[in-house]
Length: 250
Image 1: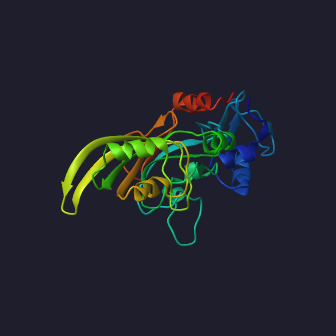
Image 2: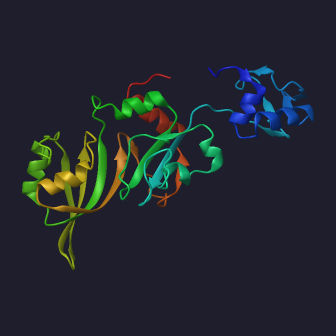
Image 3: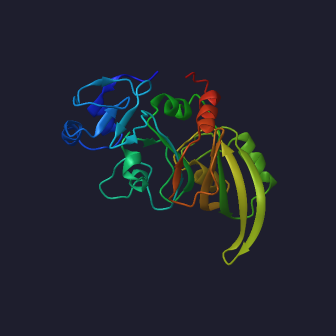
């Protein structure tokens, strides 16, 4: 059930101006509730039960947002930064209103699926180290990735700080002859999120990740129709799938 809130707060949250601008618009008769012009910007309304319109356009209220971004290279997974461009900078102004934040992070040079939301409960369920949410990547690796590497990843790889990773699923998709030598196109699924983990895992077996793209997180898969740098809202079905996957009730 939606919260009841002041009319001016509802309209400002939905991007219709500052509180002072909305107060002026209300006095000018530009706002209706259930078809009737109201003149009190402090009126308490229930945005689910009552129909609010601004200049004749219905105001669709929401207090949570879920965005799927195909993160491009050169952008950091943060809400703000004094020097670097962030994933929030890629959003339209109206999608910034509810203050979404990235769920986890992708390295600056890593591309692919990044979820942005202001749903703190869902973010916690997806990021908690105890939850072991699957994260799947495709990578181009410099070196001939083979069965020995698959076995090593299945057993867990010791990283440069002596940390032993959880078992990971490694699939070899293709071998490519490049000027630098043979390269392998692979898909890997990990269940934890250590710093630069995929790159460090391949470093540990004497190989180097050249490109890295996340294609799935839990039950959510990257929409391949999204070009790098573009995003869309999750469908209701995708949100429910994520919530059900983490055992969250509405």
